[in-house]
Image (cartoon, rainbow, N blue to C red):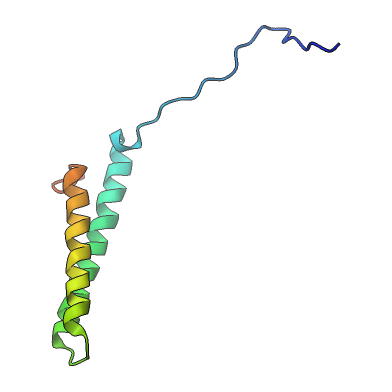
Length: 85
C-alpha cells in the first residue's frame, strides 16, 4: 500500500478569499480604534502645549505627524466619514 488513494475521491479543501475590509463590523471597529487613537494624541498635544518641559516642540511635531498618518489611513480606506447606523 505505497499509494494511498482517497476512497471518496475528495478534493483538497480550497482556501476562501475573505475581504475583511468589506465587512461593516470590521470597518466600524477599525474606524473606532483609529479615531480613538487620534483623539488621544490630540489630548496629549494639548497637555504638552501647557507644559514647560524641554523638547516639547519635537514631541508635538511627532504627535502631529502620527495624527496626519492615521487620518490619511482613514481617508485611504474611506473610513474618514464612516458612520455606524
